[in-house]
Length: 449
Image (tube, rainbow, N blue to C red):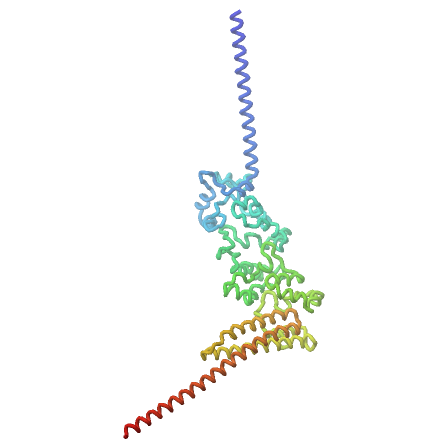
C-alpha cells in the first residue's frame, strides 16, 4: 500500500507541473499578443502621436534625422540650420513632430516609414491639415501658446486661396507660402515674412508677379499702388505698426476681396466716424443701388492718397466733379470747400499774428492754446464732409470762426499794447535825454561863473 500511495503522489505531482507549465505558456502568449497589438496601434497612429508630443526624441536624445541630413550636407542640411531660429525648434519640437517617422531608427527605410506617419513634402492640398494637426488642436496649443487661435485651418478653408486649393489648383498660397517651412519665425519677429512691415512684400511675391497671376485675370499693380498710399507711408516710413497693410483689409487666413457692400465696413474698422456719417448721407442709397463701393469711389482702394481740401468742390482736381458738374451737388460741394478754406485761412492768419506778438515778448499763451480748438473744429469739419451736408459743415465752421475771431482780437490787442509800450518808452527816453541835456547846460553855466 505504501508503494501504491507513493506512485499516486508522484503522478499527481507530475500532473500539477504540467498544468503549471501550460498556464505559464498561455500567459506569456497572451502578453505577447497584447503588446504586439499596442505596438501596431502606436505605429498606425504615427504622425498624429508625434505631432501632439512636445518632442519626438526619446530620453536618449537620439535624432537620426539631424544626423543623416547634416552628413549629406548642401541643400539637405539647410533645414537643420534653418531650424535654429525656428519658433517650433525653440519650443522643443523637432523634425518628427511635423514629418512623423521614427527618429530613433538608423535604417532610413524605418526612420522614413510611411507606416509610422512619415510625410516628406505634403502636397498643397495637404498643407493646411499638415499644420492643423497641432494648430487646430486646443490641447496641444495650450501646452505651447494658450493665446494662439485654433481656427486658422477652418478660416483658411473659407478663403479664396483655400477654395481654389480644394478645387485642385496648386498655385494659391498655403501656410508655408506666407510663413515659410523650416525657419518659421513668430509673427512678432521683425524678420518674419508676416511681420506688419513685411506683409505687403510677402503678398506681392505672388500678386505682383504678372506671369504667376495671368491665369486669374486680376490686376498685379496692388503692391505698386499701395506703396504710394498714405497707409504705406505711415507704416513703412513712419513705422506706425497700427497703419493697415494687406491682411488688415483682406484678412489673413480667411483672405478674400471685400464685396462692394462690405467696403465701408472694412474701412469703418478704423475710420468709424466717417463710415457712420456716410451711412446717414444722401450718397448711401444711390451708391448702394448702383453697386458702387462707397469709400473706394472717392479714395480708391490700394492707392489711397492723403486727403486734401482740393478733393472737395467742382475744380479739376476735385473728386466731386466726377459725378457732379453744374447741379445742386456741385454747388453744395463748392460751398463746403469755400467754408473750409475760409476757416483754414483765418487760422493761419491768426497764428501768424499770435506768433508775432509772442516773439515781441507779449503774453499770448492763452489765445494760442484756444486756437488749437479752432484747428480741432477744422478737422471735425473735414470729417463731417462724409455726411455731404453743407449746413452741417457751416455749423462746424462757424464755431471755429468764432474761436479764431476771439484769438485774433487777443493777438491784435497784444500788438496794440506793444505799440503803446514802445511809444511810451520812446517818450520816456526823450524826456530823459532832454533832462540830461538841461543838466549838462546848467553845469556849464555854473562853471563859467
